[in-house]
Length: 195
View 1 (cartoon, one colour):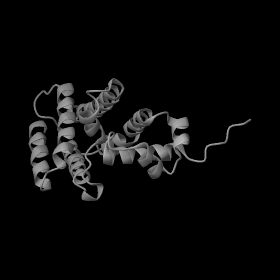
View 2 (cartoon, one colour):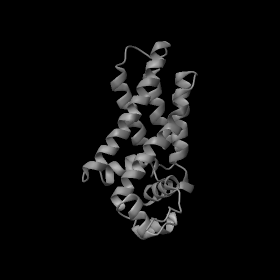
View 3 (cartoon, helix red, strand yellow):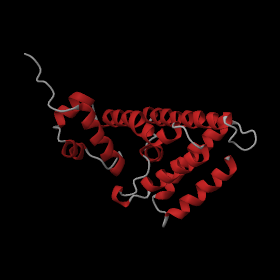
């Protein structure tokens, strides 16, 4: 007997699952929630993705591939590095303080706090995503250095790690910040130290 073909697009289901995990967190998202949000029956979810934890890991992988690239794209274009980094953090601030998105922060920052200390597979995904961000910042800073735009002689790897920490911290602070100036003050100090 032949298996029935899947009646859903796996990438679309992963995107929907990722959005739900991002909004509610892993623990507060039930399998029933996932079925309702994705429109896929429980048996089909299990058959395709495994259990809830496996689906979450796949959603983290999907986030790493798709979401980070969109945010970092501005740093990969030609232009004035200081203006680009300011625009990067302004876009991050805008997205993070978007009440329509319930100020959900960054999926990776949320996951690092909620699950990474207790699940080595999740911790590995978080670490890989943060390393990817670090490498993107490093490439950006290397270009800025070659163009003579950086102040002093910074260690680019350390500076890249600082920017990752600042980015993740801004996401967390945006969850409760009263206004965007709070976040802007933070990244303006960073910009003045780097450029």
